[in-house]
Image (cartoon, rainbow, N blue to C red; front, side):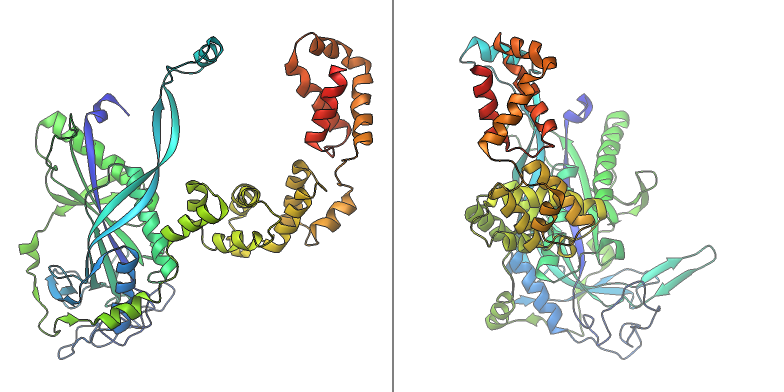
Length: 521
């Protein structure tokens, strides 16, 4: 971070708009299916098109989904909430107003825990020996180490509202598709607790995963079923923990459609606001901007509207939304095991690190896959985690394949791990084997190993014979003398020759012991 940026602190708040997964829309019986592949304006009721005389009726399923989301986000569910009209005029909003919940939402005061990777400065000054001090002198004094840090962000409210239609712009006209108009939305409003682009991106990623996990939104930002408005302000950093510095004027960046672009917009907007303050001395103007993905810049759209501009007032065609304790309990009872509890259970049951558990939980279907492989008690859990998170994930990423469609099923990966545990194959051979299983061969791992002649050599007499042949090679005599003269680092040279002579089939630990005994004899 530059010296300029180090004097400033960015304050970020998110407003996430998530389409509610339901069969019909929020206030009408029209289908809630609104994907771009549908024929435009084929999922539109009279109410969605704002025909005079039509009245809204609340979809109970949408309310249930909002309660489930509030429960998952540790929010206080309000049994009495109110729908209001929020007035603004766009061609894809037929009513001329949006029915929403501003002053009395369905849920308030939530919290989201998340982890973010931060670069920490580590300086080691305490040495117990001269040897440690000399070793440390070869390393940079201020070593940068990436660590996963626990964070928390507060949620101000969760409100139910209706979505607008979609404007499709061409060179000569703007076309309006009302398939999406009236679809139920959950707006999740966060407090400005986030302090970096990385934190903002991770929160959006966590919410996306959570909503998919509990089935209240599909989270597809590329389809517009989940969108995010970004609020950014900057202020000088406090000089002490007790110093209270007020927030700067916030700027809203509308309709972020990807996590990557959200993070880019934070970085750009932070720098822009600092430059304005330091260069001109002027205050930041409260405005609404849009992000241009092609240039990585935000652009002014309009001045930011206030509550007076929207002319909020209670929706006259809808009574207050009153829900019973039984309705709330019934909705919350349908929640699956939540990600936070799942991470804690994986760490406690399988001895996984917080990072390993987080990666599994945040990857769809990965926990089921991992636990399926772990059903055999003879397989060490850390070994399973290592092969799933590293080798298998690498192959899945290379082919852009979800884990539930992996060519290597949990049963077949388990068979491969059994071969490692029983010392039938080495780890080196196992890496070749899993690639063959993934791309080419659907047979059992043992059949492949037997055909390829990949059985690991574990017999001590056979291992001693291979080691002795390496030591008998005239080309290696100088290195043998050097090793016995004190150059212990040459030990790897001999092991490498053993691996080459055996095509990597020797047992690593056993051959290390035998070679050391022969060299030291």
